[in-house]
Length: 199
Image (cartoon, rainbow, N blue to C red; front, side, top):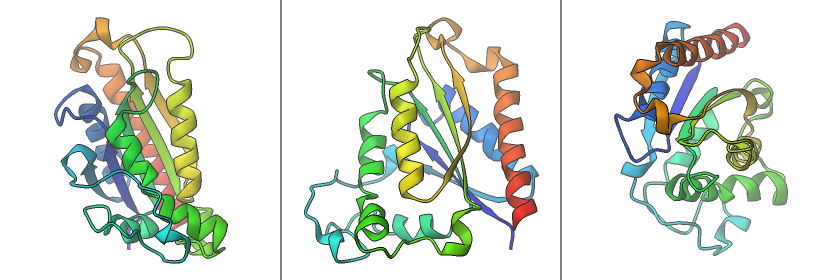
């Protein structure tokens, strides 16, 4: 079976600049031989983590909502492409809540010593982070990158690469910068080829 790559859109704009970059990266992964799918986080119906700690002893969350099937889906994937704007120097709230609900993975991996991801897959899973920022200032991506790296670590995905585009307040429309869209495609393709070669 070809490797599976899941694209995670953290923007509420389903055809905005971030979505366009993610779609191009997924096109690249598909052309490299991967099976791809996209999750638009803002379309999901779920609540933020309540720290019920049900997941300390169970391999799921006590809350049953659109996050429930995500745990199995994320245990079998080979690659993740996570795309998001920077908001308030970090990850948008809905995407952060999505990540926090993977406390289920954290407890399985670090508390029960029974990770969701099989040992033979852990070293092959790769993640690409795509982000845009309206501002063009130093350190604008630092907070979001730390969060994404922590999330990838919890779900046993290597932080394989990134595409970080500042100054979107001036660029406004990413289609006026085809080089950025081409870079998203290239990174998706390269990650896809790496996954195919290791599968």
